[in-house]
Amino acid sequence: MNIFGNLIAVLLGGVALGAMMNTVPDYNSSFQPFAVFAGKDGIGQGRQFIAELTALKRADAISYTRFKEDVSRDTSATFLVAELSISGRSESRQLEAIWLGATGRQYSQSARLEEAPRNLSLARFEPGLTDRTVAIFEVPKDEIVGGRLALAPRGGMVMDSAVHFAGPAAMPGNQPMLRLEP
Image (tube, rainbow, N blue to C red):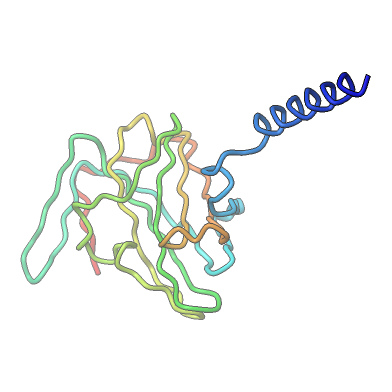
């Protein structure tokens, strides 16, 4: 009888362990920034920064001036430009942006436009000072409506907050050439 009781205890323990393994979130979903959603006014408050999405623009090509030379970039997809107003809350902060497409794919900022004026990837935000910046993505057109923008501290601050902005309900107007100014 004692062996039978031990066997039942081991089986129940195995069932409990199996249930825990199937219901506990995996590492990737456990260790990521906390999602904070911006309000209807387009302003989101993370733990270390406050951000406002002021406009979303779409363009076939982007131009800007770098070292007194005109630079022009085009794409086979479409450029999605998110204009932002950001300020730090209690310390200097660098941020990164990700476009979460309508199909669930994630798009990082375009590396081909890192030297564009006011680019988010080069900006540093100080407490009490509000700066204007842009995040530029190259995405397929079908990823825009139904997608959303996410801002998070650079460097994978897993126990920090990421601000999510609602995506556009309709496709933003397209410009053949969008000029970025400092």
